[in-house]
Image (cartoon, rainbow, N blue to C red; front, side, top):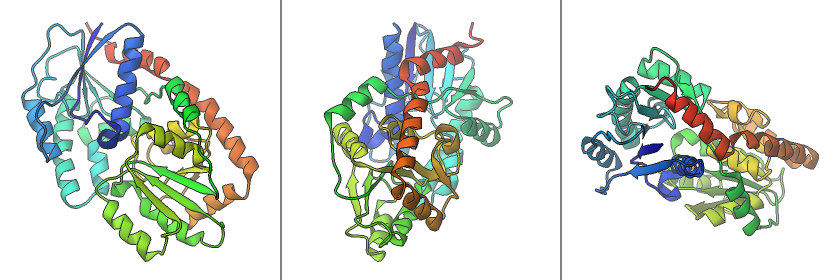
Length: 347
């Protein structure tokens, strides 16, 4: 089968984050099953990402020789109508994400959400990674039916290879956050929890991987909370260093209030790390075994982290459960689910 992937998401982990990882891993897995996957991406690079996406979509043409066209997020909205082989694969629902942002980020994401709505309504089939995203897509985009659910994949063999090649140790109790620094990630809740844990966890280290539009406010908050010796902002890092950070961590923390899925949860599970996270959005679907707390509650987050600090046995048990659960998301299995859903009803 010849499959065409349409995506304006930057094809690197620094800018494309989890969206890039999910698309890349899926393509590799589909090729491993014997299919051809061709990427169509923007040729024109612009400083304004939303404008780049709109121009990319304006220039897209149908591909009569393709057996399946998969447009990720909003990409493909102009050519989706009337094609029985066009699938809209929403990695998240932008109309849901935008509710948690402000300023220029909110403005540009609102523009993207309008195009994503058109894409979802015009495509022959809509795929989403979680039940949470399915409900959001139906609500915000006015879909008559719930989209099909296909979870995000993780290449377990490759990720385990990275983990094995990049060992790391820690001198103190280490909490890791990884992700793009948007407001909806609520990293400020983690920083406030770290301040509350001063004196309760000697040698606590909070290591933050990732960059984004909310980085500057978070830096100011860390200084206000006098966390210079506790919080280590690493910015964007290569995959090898990311694996080392998972190895170094005692706990992985995701305080986000909006996640369409959360590939970082799979990475933490595959690394055998216990998870502390918000009981919000798709997080309970992906990591029900984690220690999940009330969103935007620094005290609850601090208490959960301290609980795991004081119980190595609970950390080990949660890590083992994560290793068991993550097997369901291995890339070859998810690729087969993806094909079944993407081709369902196609003529």
